[in-house]
Image 1 (cartoon, rainbow, N blue to C red):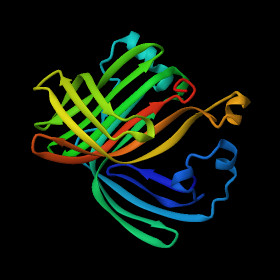
Image 2 (cartoon, helix red, strand yellow; image 1 turned 60 degrees about the horizontal axis):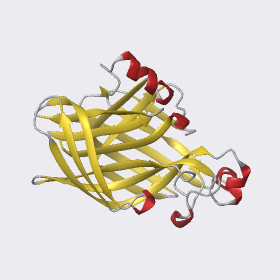
Image 3 (cartoon, rainbow, N blue to C red; image 1 turned 120 degrees about the horizontal axis):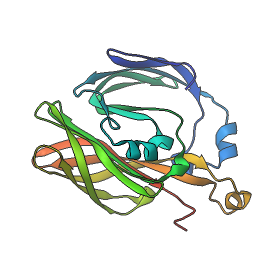
Length: 247
């Protein structure tokens, strides 16, 4: 966003910009109202990530044929867990941020049309245990990966199995079984606390806009409370939906 700057070591994002307000019940709006709504709310951000895991490239070590399939979604995809610290000033009101979280970054222009579906699960249980699991189908090929941070090392995820209760913006719960290249499988149970829907691919046919389905692909970002054994952590369950195909 305009006005924001990013620095490294440690990772820090700061700056001031203006955003347009939207009601949660009506978001995302259709593309034209979304773009034309005036940016009347000033937002100042100063956040730093205290990393507890290394920055891991999901694409490292994948065979060339898999990298070719994933190329439309990015040449590389890096994720990292830690603790966010700092403040967000929203319309004159200061909000102190102190809690677990993560960051990610992809290289290359992303073509969401190549993604049949996308399932990303991230959670931090503390400095000694974190999960970044991805299951994506691109051009008809399923790729599963990511990493589990455990015993001070990153274990490559080789299998992502999941079941959900509810779907789309009505997702209520998720169960995961993650198989890694080293160490026992990890089982997670997640309860969704809140979901925000983000549009990422605009429908190109005017008739779909008239029918109230202006987006070809949306991301449902679900803030989730995860449990594993006797540990509790918070993270994200990110699932795509194609309204065109689902109705």
